[in-house]
Length: 193
Image (cartoon, rainbow, N blue to C red; front, side, top):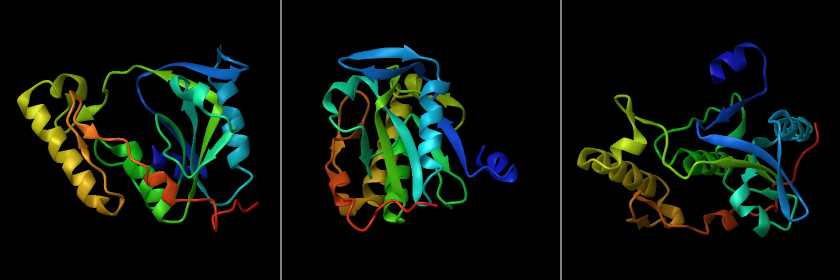
């Protein structure tokens, strides 16, 4: 997809998870369903104004009540992400959203999360593992759990400076981490194009 988008001269492309059910807007205390273009277009218009945004995304509806600010900067972007082409970075492994966000931030890019523009996704693990196996099914098998554990351990080693820990629950993932506070807005101001 990035190659196709780049060959057409596009500065960005959308990277979408396959488990997005609804697009919504937070109005007052309610999450109101809207067509996808009403969520994606404002993100594109905002990002087009700046040169140093590596990726942007809507927030997840389950966290909408907790966000007081309209925008969050230098946090993880995930699930429905407008990605800058030509950064030289790539999505890799099952921890792909976290890993990609950290790649962007450590390379000096800014990430933006829109806290009033929302998506709803399933809570299941989705995606494909090597060999075309579905992650939802494979995590249950011993072979699938071993592959996922290896992926999580590799992620933790790759980003050891952030002190991630393994959370050994049904999904084998990294425990929540406060690494995002490392990337404060200081020195990372948005630069108008």
